[in-house]
Length: 471
View 1: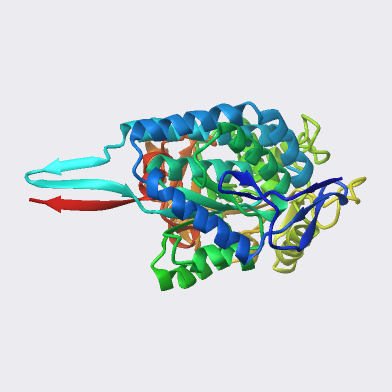
View 2: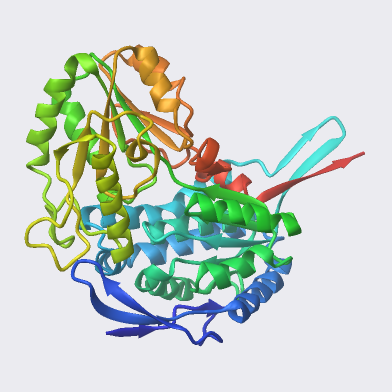
C-alpha cells in the first residue's frame, strides 16, 4: 500500500497541517490500495501565500519566459505518460485506452497553450489607446476526479501562459495521479511558488480558495451544485470564475445517416470513460421511421462492448469510481424503469462475475420521453436514453430541452443539413459525424453547463484582465 501526502508548496514537497487520512480504493475490486493525508485550511493559506509572493515577479514575465516554462512542463509530463496512465487505471478504474488518451492530452496541453500564447496579442493599440492584457493574479484551480491529470494540466497551462501563479486543489480521489504530476513539476524546476498543490476536501481547501481575498480567480470543473456555491461565495471578494459543470449531451441521428458507422460511434460516445464524462452523448435522438432498425443495430453492437478489468485493452466499460457512484447509477436505472422506459440492453445489478467491484451493466433505454428523469439528469454512468423524433425541428427542440448545454453531436450524410442542425443547438461544442476535438477550440457550456471557456486562446484569456491606457 502507498501512503502519500501529495502536497507541494513554494517549490517543496511538504507535510500537511491537516491530519485527516483517507483510504484510496481500487474500484475494480474495492481493495484498499493506499492512503492520503488530506490538507486543511491552514495548508491552503500557506499555498496561497506562496503563490502571492511568486506572482510579484512571475506576473511580469515575458511571453518567451512563460513559453519556456510550458515547454519544460510538457517535457517532464510526457516522460511520465506510462506512470500517469497506470495510476489512472488503478485508482479510478479508467479503461486503459481512454486513460492513455487523456494522459497524452494532459501532456499536450502545455504545447497547445504555448502555441496559443505565441499567437495571442497581449498588447492592442488604436489611435492613442493602448490595451494591455495582464494576468489576473493568483488562480485557484479545483479539479474533478474523472480526468484529473488532464484538468490539472489544462488549467495550469492556461494560467501559467497568462502569467498567473496557481494553487491547485485536485480531487482527493486522484492522489496517485497527483503524486506523479508533482514529481514532474519538481523536476521541471519552476520558480518557487508559481505552482502549488494542496489535496484536500472541497469543504476545507476548496472553500478557503474561494473565500480568500488573495485568490483572484477560480477555475472549477465539477457539479452544478458546487459551481453555484462557488459563484455565491466568490462574489464576496469579486472572484473571476470559470466553471465547467457537466452536461446531458444530445446526439442527433438524422434520417439519412449510415447506421453501420453511426451506431458504433454513438455507443462509444455514450459510454465514453464508462459514462463518467461530462461530454458523453447520453441522449440519442433517432428518427422514429428507423427506430426498429436502430434498436437491432444497438443490440448487435453492444455484444462487442465488454465490461470488465480496465487494464484489459479490449475493455470498453470499467467500474464506477466509488461505491457511492455505483449506487447513484443504479438508482437512476431503477428510476427509468419506474417511469416507464423500456430496457433494451442491461438493467439493474452487477454484470455476472464482477460483483466485487463497482461495475454496472451498460444500460440502454428505449421509449424514453425527454421529460423523464433519465433524460434530464446527468447520471455519470453508462446509461443511454434513446428518444424518437418525427421531424428535424422536433429533434432540435428536444436537443435544446435541457438545462445543460455543454456538448452535442449530429450525424448525417448531408453535411450542409447537419451543419444547419448543429447551428441551432445550444451547446458550447457541436461535433458533426464523430467525437471530434480541436485543442484550440473553446470548451465550456451554455446554461447550467457553466460559465466561461477553456482551451487555446479562450482559456488563456480567462486568466487575463484588460488594462487600457489613454493618452
